[in-house]
Structures are given as structure tokens and as C-alpha cells.
Length: 505
Image (cartoon, rainbow, N blue to C red; front, side, top):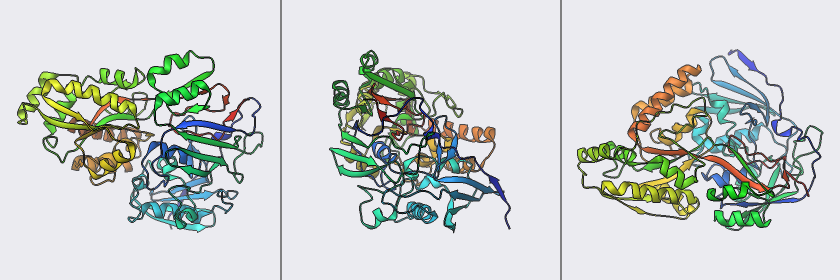
């Protein structure tokens, strides 16, 4: 019988720390939001959808504000000596927002659905090589892996994409509009393109250090305002209390105001050009490298972020322990021309770049890239699309290149696996490198930090050299809100949480 090595963790509820002053219970926070694209956590891949779900769904384990793993729906966990069997002991005082008790069966249902090929979930990669999920008791669940995965626990803490859902919303067909979770809020109204109403979950299990039930707010009204400049105007006028984004060029003006707080944190994220490797001449690595050599990333970053981003040639920010700072592509037009000549397209070619209206900085970045490629004879057309159309076009592979971002990335596996492993659902570029595939599997098994670092350093170099993702910059994580909004902090993992927020009126 396999001996289990216990990793019992003291129950820490990081979100429930005292804020140091009296909270005002009640009220509705009005937030300027962007349009979510579906609310089924197993189907959507949209950042703004995930952040809605962050208020509704909870995970087995969580990251606190300092990025330490802490208990959430699981009180403790243990792993077998061979690293294959993970056992979680669950909280027994939790209910879904519909009043039904949360049990181990809900954990099994959630992850079985995510892993079911018929669900075709783009988030299944997060679970790695899970072979089975078994209920060992009403509040005990085990995961059996096909191979050890050092980052498995972190994956279970990766926010709403792995949040626990109630099967009722799947069975009645409302999972994409009103998923049911155990979180501090529940969705009571969703009008696509207009608003999402979140109301306090009166059955929520969490309380603060003084024993006051969370959340403090009665409700959060998410007003869908696609244009960042309109978000900024709504914030300044007081029409909204909080905004998920503002035009970066407005930051100096907002920071100078005494009625607005600009809250910044480093973002574990990157912006990049995704290149379709199945379209000529972009299927030639020399052409992709030529594009990378042609770019002035500093200029792109300044135009896109107004100085709030950091230019980069690989994905992991320098503030991370996993940073590699591999930078082989200083702007070199002569080298770029030579590579195009070698590839047989020395006279240039036509190419489209697909940004989206959902992210204005993607358009600004694409415009600068268009200008920077012109001296090489690369004639770029911008194919700007609405977000839902953009996602569909990307998913169908009907693009030459696109500009977008990857967000909420903590473990090195998060930066590479889903995007670059052969055949993975988020590998929209068609990239396939057997060396990278093998290294990515090794990285999931290695336990020692130095060994993992060396593996992912190789992965990073292979991907940067292949220029299938042409990395541009690491963004900042910036939100802005009125000074009467208390108890909110921009988090380093990019998750937005209103559970301890209140309005000081």
C-alpha cells in the first residue's frame, strides 16, 4: 500500500485579514468592465470572463497576496511518495449560492467535465496528466496522475478557469450565462454587451478576522463599456466607482487627482505577435526571425502602453525567479534583409496583422509594427476585429499574424505548455517542435528548482529562436477607482477580487 506523505497546512484564509478600520457593510459597487465572451469556465478563454467568474467560483487551493499557496475549499492536502496520488480534505461548511451543500462529488464533477473530450475545454491542459478523480468520502477527493507534476498544486490555484461549479447550471443550460459557485457573489442578471449584476451570496462561508460575514458589499454592477476613454470619463465623473482599465495616456492625469486612486502591480503576463506557421512564407523560420529583427520593441511598448510596459524578447518578466532575459533580436534591418533573401522573399511580401477593438493597445502596437516592417518590403494590412469575431478567427486558424496577450501566468509551465505543446488547444499557431514537447514534459516532472530552471531555459531559447511567438513587452497590472473604494488591492497574480471591498460613503 502506498505510504502517503502528509503536507498538512494550517488553515489560512488570506482574503480575510483585518483591514485596520471599520468596514461599511452594504451598498453596490459600480465597475466599468469590458465585454465577457461566455461565462462557462470550461469553454471561455477571455480575460474579462475569467474576472467575472473570479467573484463567483472558488478553487481548492489559492494564492495569497504574496503568491504563497494557501487552503481554500480544501483545508489540507497530501501527496504520495511517488508524486502520483494527491488527496484533498475539503471544508465541510460550504454551500453553493443556490443553497446546496458542496461535497467531494462536486470536485469530481467539475474536473471530469473539464477533462471530457466532448467538453473540448481549453483549460484541460491545466490539470496535466490526471488519469482519474475519485471520491474517497463526502469531503475527501483524490487525483491520480499518470506522471508526477511539480506544478500540479499551483494549477489548482490558477483562478476561475479551475473553479468548482455546481452541476445544476450545466443541466439546465445556464452555465454560459449564470454559472453557480461557492464564491462571495452570484450572478443574478447578465445582459450581453450591457451589464453583469453580481449580488452577495448570503450562504457564503467566509468571514473576516472579526467574524463578520463576507463579502461586505451587497452587489457589484459590472457595466460593459468597451472604450477605455469612456471608462476613464465615467470614473472621473463618478458614474462608476472602479474601472478594469483606463487609457494609459491618462494615467498621469488620473494620478494627479485627489478623488481617484491608480493601483498598480507587476503583471505575470506578456504581449506578443502570434505567427501562423502553416502559411507561406511565415512557415519559414528565417522569415519569422526577420520580422523579429525588424522590430524596435521600445517604440512598440511606448506606443502601446505609454511607457507602462517593459520591452522584452522572451515571455517571463524580469521580476520573476524564472526570468531568463534571453534577447537575441536587437533591431537589425540588415540581418532581417539577409534572412528574407535566404528565404527567397527578398522583395518582401503581403501579410495581415489581426488586432482587436477589445484591447486598444493591440491596435496601437499593430500600427507601429506595420510601419517598422515597411522598410523590408513587408506590406502589412491591419485586420481589426471585434473580440468575439477575433477569438473565432484565431480558433479557426484564419490569420497570418495577430497581436494579443497571455495573462495570469505564475509557474514556468504556464508560459509555454498550452501555447506551444504540439496539438494543445491553445496552440493556434500550429507550432510543433519535438525537442520543446519533450522538455515541456520533463519540466512537469522535475522537482528541484535548478533542474527545472535549466529545462525551461532550453524551452525558452527554442521558442524564441523559432520566433513562432514574437514577444514584445511585459505589461503592468493597472486598475483605477474612486477614493471611497476601500479594501481593494491590485494583485500580483492579476486576479480581481471584491470580497473584502467596501464603499466608504
